[in-house]
Length: 213
Ligand SMILES: C[S@@+](CC[C@H](N)C(=O)[O-])C[C@H]1O[C@@H](n2cnc3c(N)ncnc32)[C@H](O)[C@@H]1O
Image (cartoon, rainbow, N blue to C red):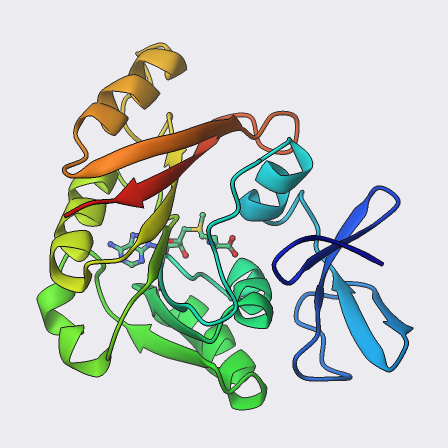
């Protein structure tokens, strides 16, 4: 395993995170052991962050000591890898069905804190979160820029990553126009880089952002 970013590893064409909870897998991912450590392969078909790394993301802003606010945690695939990398992951998810899976994951992966809430209402969960260094947002909602703005204003992260899904905003517009328009709506963010996720994901880009608010 070669380390390519803080807490992210590569072996051949695969990327992986070091398993913080040995023996535990989340979505049937392959595990390999090396020098007393266990590494979980990170599937770019299942995770936009892994797809962005495979597609050449250059500026890795997520650090080992970061507390992450994860908006749109779903059943916990990407959050579980983010939790291998970072200190704590506050995983916000609106769907009760997804929350059930997330709760199961958090019973083993104790640095994942599941929060059943609407990410567009951060005032409903702000009391449960101490500090946030990084926001990762993947909610596939038409008001995704507004959701990130609201959360950033309250939690004041240093960095963020936003997965923008063109089709969830306006199916009649050209995707690149939509990405530009959404990024233009962000307040106090600077764009570090924009990574297309094709062929792993046809409709999304991942926007790597710094926050100066
Ligand atoms: C594309 S999935 C996220 C996949 C996940 N990020 C991963 O890589 O493992 C989008 C998720 O956002 C959730 N979602 C949509 N709107 C939301 C909102 N307003 N607040 C919180 N979660 C929301 C959906 O229920 C869904 O589980």
